Length: 420
Image (cartoon, rainbow, N blue to C red; front, side):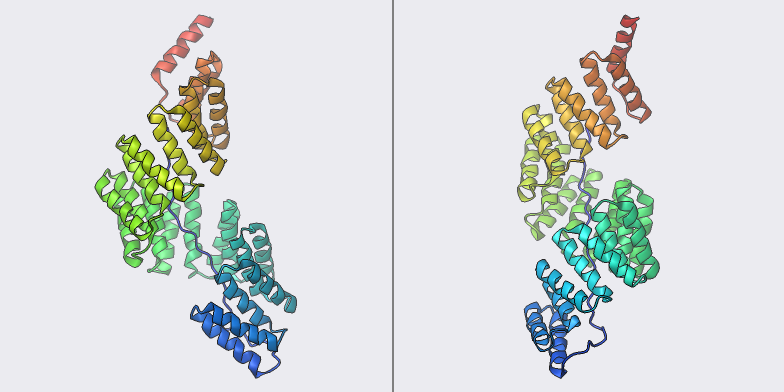
């Protein structure tokens, strides 16, 4: 059975603040004065004061597009996305060619979860200014969220072409390579991001994860350590470094890192999940279940933790509880092929062969390269006396380099001999 570690990556979003924009025609000095005061407060993170000043500027000049846009930036930072969208929309009505406002409204839509609307606004931004690198990067983020990795990669590539120092775009190119399991490409992209910005802690973390994925644990640990040096509060780096130590079977060091993550964020579901995996690897299933339970307590949509707890219950032969957890994993992530495969294994162990076959088939549909699912379905078909189908699945599993159970192959040979 396969169990997955959470890919520890952190998403970041780029915003455009037009602090150097040309002055908009205003009704008088006072409107401009309040606008500039608002910008100063915005720079300092004093968002309520900034909004008050932008309100004054707009009161004195209701057609002051820059003031609406900047007030939108303040609202966006305060997560008042509907208010931000309203201000950006007003900006666009006053100045339809104001491409930065389209980008900023797209960002507010993105944060609000209206990703398709965000893409539409980014489209308009790059239509108005084809050299607007940040809009390409933001559209790349939107496509990344939609899991349209080809379009996402094209946008990040364009963003880097327009602005080679846009390190976040280079970082996301690496994330796409990670999603595609093209680890050497990911490492190259992160290295470029680090070259562009040597203090980019997340790029070190993500390059470390790429090294982790290929089993280069020492290189991974070096990158995670650098990320922590640059940002001692970066929870994800402690989680990632702990995974690398776990890969080296240095469980004590791994546990220390996960506990450091929890010290920074006592509700970090990844740390609890990873501690659970440490116990799972050492066959301490009750302790593993306790940790996975904490993970899903703090993130009820954490599909991997539900799956992992299901695996622990499976090892204890508590098949109904295992099935219930795999159900939760699938509910949280309907495209989770391994969860279907694992639930199929629980059904197989419970002798519910038809249900097992259905789950293995779904797992294969979601991931045609999942050799284990072919092997498992072969076992289920054998129990149903569908020997030809079992033989075909066993053969396919072998083609995918899976070590098929010798006893199953022998039994299938005997069944074929009897048919003759």
